[in-house]
Image 1: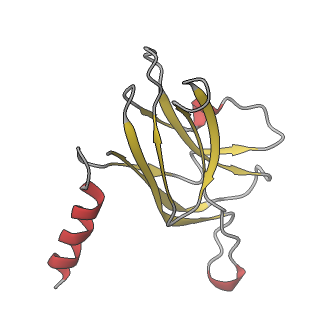
Image 2: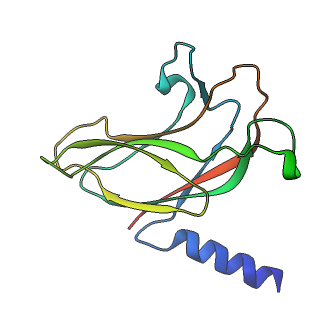
Length: 142
């Protein structure tokens, strides 16, 4: 029975024109702390995207603002995504907080730009916190 369930999970994750890629988001390593100078590209998970391609991006897992669990835990609200789409004049930069269980879809710009990518990171206000848990970002070409 477990094999059937895992087979269905893999099938759902790989649905589309290609195989879904999964990227772990570590809530400590991939965290930008507010009030501290930072460069998102240094901390974020960076995913190279193809031009003029439709993508589906989902998030699973859970992460917390401390090592507490249960009712005392303070969950992180999700992952901040930074990416480019073909909206507006053909090249729009968007930011969004993707929560666990949510999925977004977008098409990358048509313009020839070798630097089209998606950045994913979490944010915290207190630099001394020990964030725990893990998110998994799933990126799939449709």
